[in-house]
Length: 268
Image (tube, rainbow, N blue to C red; front, side, top):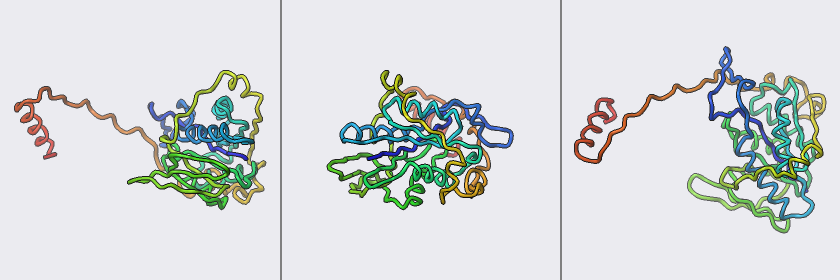
């Protein structure tokens, strides 16, 4: 049984967003982190591996060569194999072009009966939550999104899906695609033995030539910026809010001051 986990290296959006002169995000000038939801997906895969026999966890990512550092961290956490899809042709991809390329990579790794493909709910740099479902549709696999609990026993996969007003418990056939949210678990840290072993585990880099025979990639016009029907017009940091005004006390005078201030701003 294989569990294929899609992971992404993203800009650390907790800091200042670097923007180029043309309005697009300057990723090379920003610190990067592993996408948080993807780490929850990886942790879920590793937990299944610990409770089931003959489970292999593979991580796959599309990105520039420095993405290797993130994939090595995944191997140090306990993943068995890593695949990096990296080529200039894949650059500038929107969710559609990204899912085309990742579907081709997953197809090349191989999805058989009993296998699971896991993704994070969404990436913090785009917040679209589209790539996982698009991969499922292109590979013609059943999917469950917003997964907050997983139970896998005797070959039966039961998941709990979070809704806006409650939960839904679903039994799903494999192979399938699951997109995971942060409430699912707490990702583990790398272990010292894992760090020592991560450079001896299988690691492959696939370029455009390695995937171009897939129906999801094909001509170069189908991937990267050329294959993206949507494009980001502009990226920018929102203006910094001014310092708030604190009103001390809980007496009548403080209440009158608050009402007066809210009235001045036409809030009330």
